[in-house]
Length: 220
Image (cartoon, rainbow, N blue to C red; front, side, top):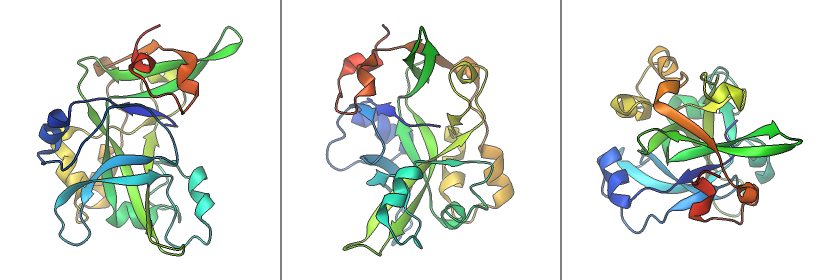
């Protein structure tokens, strides 16, 4: 799964990544957790233009009767999302990208769980594949999202049995385009090359979602 990640890149770098001007600030975040609002890139429902918007992490299907179902849908398996009732509508029409500079996984070591930080070797940000929905059965419409996961590459395999889907930059537009056919989409849902990533142990302070400091992504 992907249950915690970081986005600590300069705003201008994210603008170049998506070829988009971002309005407002984009403060660095070192410990993004489920149920929080997270930056996402999607095609605006009204104009079809790219936009960076904050959505609540934990997808609530449009048909759900209760809001708390989202806490169990922070991730969606890439192998089953196209057909699973909770995700299939969003997979067809509402795909997005979630910028990140790294994600965390935990490994049992020495009788406890040691957190590891996984990021690109070159330090550049990347985009995780996601889906979004609008839930309208509460007091006001609520837009939520989930992160797609896939089989781990050889690096992440030693830490966890799943990893987030990382979409190559050259197919961002195709991933976002609602007209892209299912076969083309499925080809994108592969493990990111292990040779382009590194993983190292970090402070256990990351276990506390209230902690949000640069130290959390530094080797320990």
